[in-house]
Image (tube, rainbow, N blue to C red; front, side):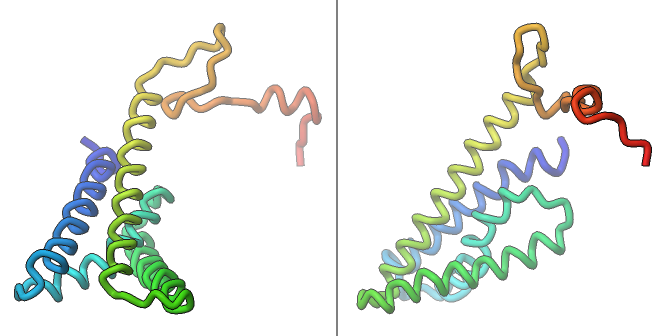
Length: 152
């Protein structure tokens, strides 16, 4: 199993479990000792990972840098919106962030399932089906016939 295929399932699962954990320690068990590290993990990783995974980056360092940056930006934007709207409430802000992350994780799962099914679908040019990820299209001859060949 390649890195990309198991990460397509692993990260949405981590986001969902982290969102559930942050919700539990905030709303159900607020006096637990595990609350600060769980909520910090959720706030610093999950919102960014819910977005950055759609970029399909190959460099891990770039991915984690963007995850941190996006997480802080998303957290700040949502908190700023609530502040300027006059609805300042940290539990409400966390609820919105949990919903945002759950929607992102579900979309990642859906995109993963759809891309997996498109990779396994054979390409049939006779029926005019679009090329799949497993067989990219080669449009060079069509472009050359319309534009002309460039020999540089």
